[in-house]
Each structure stands twice: as structure tokens, then as C-alpha cells.
Image 1 (spheres, rainbow, N blue to C red):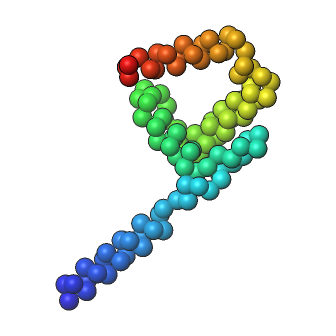
Image 2 (image 1 turned 90 degrees about the vertical axis):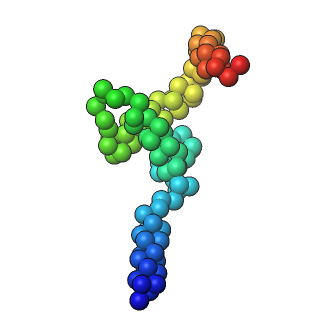
Image 3 (image 1 turned 90 degrees about the horizontal axis):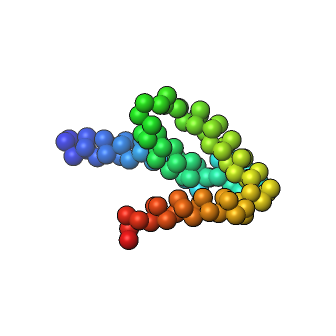
Length: 104
């Protein structure tokens, strides 16, 4: 009887976990012919949700709106060629070098 109950509980738990899982490769939205997947959004959301402790926390729905606006601004800047300007490249490379320092 105990084994049967344990088996039923494990089966129910496994079914629940399977039902809760997300398809991380599914396209959430598209910006400038570039798909943003559920996995990409969840990674960025989970990475950034604990960064600003004193800042108003955002729900996933609110963060999705902000993230889609961010992706649209980046696509617009890339289409305008702003990602190839000398000033931008200097600033970007400066950040890159700063991030590399701890690993050298």
C-alpha cells in the first residue's frame, strides 16, 4: 500500500512539473526580423530582477513591455547606423576593457 501511494505521489509530481515547464525556444515577440525567445526573456528577467533592491520591482508583464521597448530602440539605433559611430565604439570598448580586468 505504501509503495502504491508513493508511486502515485511521484507520478502526480512529475506530471505537475511537466505541465509547468515552458518552451524556452518559443518566440515571444519579433523586432526587426529578430525573434526574442521565451528563454532569452526569462534569462534577462531573472538576472535583472534582484539587481535594483531599492527600485520598484516589476512584474513579468511590466518587464516584458520595458524589454520590448528596449529591443525596439536597439533595432532602431542599429538601422540608423549608430552602432558604428566612433564615439559609440570608443565607449563600448571602454566598458568591454573594464569588464575584462577581473579576468586578466
